[in-house]
Length: 244
Image (cartoon, rainbow, N blue to C red):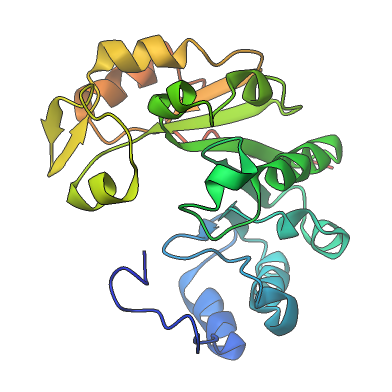
């Protein structure tokens, strides 16, 4: 996202001043808050192994008793040193998977292969973390292309899955080579699948104890909130007030 907006230089990336991050946390966040790590760019890029900016950010959040939602396409979050650092009463982890074919994934993502992401999800689940498979975006047309195997998705050993359907604009059309004929519903500059198709494709997801849908279309979100999401007040379905 940052590269697309000319705000990121991959050959000479910026590294955050961790002391500024710590000051920002102390000034702007309070105990009981939850902050998202990994919004505009992944907080577990390969450079993290050297600079440890995310590691030291989590250290400070732990000290201040501030929760953190980690959204990543990396398996690094399940490395032993990060698992030892993260507090189970504060950490919420969503690992994004968009397809199940490692080779196909490399055509449009510079990220850890899906097989390794799934292994990381299962490792975190086994250790008792609040972890979710984040099927985002969920692109049913990938099933037809044979690169999204719902059998693999449905057999991931994880209690929770979060689904976010693809929304389409001009940039997305150039990025994904798929059939867009199902995308006929317009809202806020994006084209979406109609609700009835989303319901149909959501029914292919099975075996998870909790399924929640994150949604941009207002009337669609109202449906998920009433009919599907286990937590009507939180489409991320974070497990809170835990004691370990």
